[in-house]
Image (tube, rainbow, N blue to C red; front, side):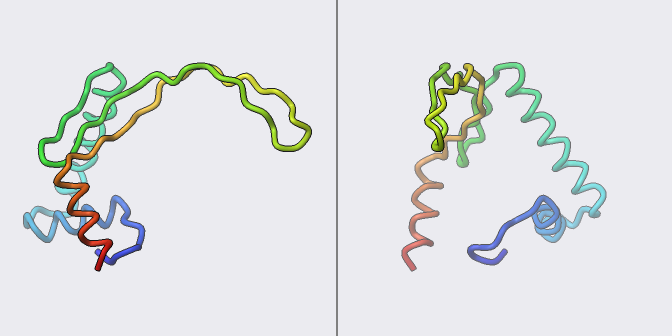
Length: 101
């Protein structure tokens, strides 16, 4: 996987296929099912903790007032739930070590 390039789901499937030796179809099925479990868990309000990687959770953003840049028209933005990811320290350190090279 190249530095500063976009990594797609297919790229992940390909890399996992190479590591595990599973077929592309089996690897794709595992990845897709894992993503569905993550989505369903977040929808249910669960916190998803992947040890050594990070934590996914849903937080509620409060309603707020924003303004359009042109005309300064006032917009009311309603409260909403948003998924957030918090990486573990070792992941942050790993990413920062690579960016300093």
